[in-house]
Amino acid sequence: MKFSKIASLILGIGLFAIAGVSLYIVYQDQTDEQDSLNQSLLAAEATLPTLISETNNLGNELVQLEDDLAQALDELDEVERKIPDSIESSDYGDLLFDLAQNLGLEVTSFTSSGPSGITEDGIRYEATYFTMEVEGKVDAILQYLTKIQVESEFWTATIEVVNIDIAEPAAGEEASANISLRILSYRGI
Image 1 (cartoon, rainbow, N blue to C red):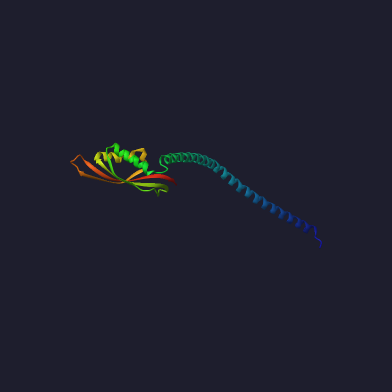
Image 2: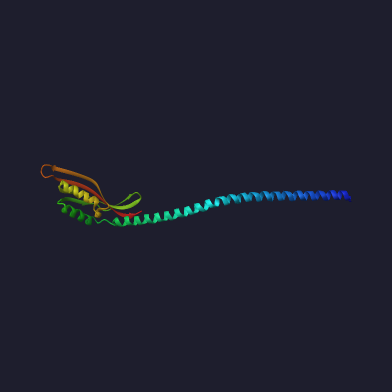
């Protein structure tokens, strides 16, 4: 088949038009994509200072939290040093007897338990329980109880029960007291 010149010209113009439209469509797609990328770039550039600021703030907060953690660990070490590693009931018994004697009290009975493991607030301790009876003046008994609560030797002591019996109030306030005491030693977390 032979095409005439006009048919060839029309065919050539048609192919040229199709190629032009195709190039225009590709160009338009590229332009749309470039606009979309420019908008994304502008949005990223707008959020970049905020992200940098937040990163700096988080870095500062991290430094502060690390300082707080170091301080808390130092305080924990200090507290752990204050809590005895073990409780020798004879040592504490001697301290309790000496304290009573210095206040003019007589210890009429004294017992201590063997150490037993307990957990309080997620921390493991070894607890030793003491039960004792002292006799003497009421004010001396009260001083004795106060010293147990505030003396550094008894830093981990807790007075659990106290029963004071005043036999004859008119006769110089002589009394006796039954005391239950618990002393803790640190075992770990």
